[in-house]
Length: 135
Image (cartoon, rainbow, N blue to C red; front, side, top):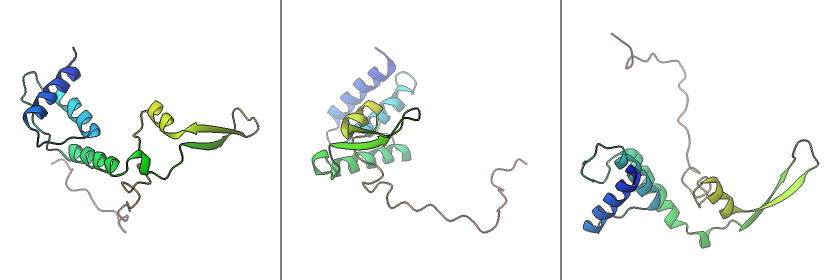
């Protein structure tokens, strides 16, 4: 048994003892990885990091958009050229392709997670970084 498997078992026990703690698949996977990196014997506790909260948000978005409610077709056709060939049409099962590539089963770009993101504006003038200067 490796450290990740041990962490998964420890988290299972923790969740059985704390039924009020709800964790989705993405957040749980992150929790297992971070717990596995802790020294042996470290008590299991719900992570209080920004990354864990982001994983919980991704789980919530995925739960809010179950596969049957998504408006994307089961199959999508793309046009490709391989080694300069004429254009070929390839049709893929979108969910199957996502699974093979290890991607989440929801469209992260179109489901609202990143669709409303606006990057901060660039400053008009270069500002000296005094916070990271060595004395």
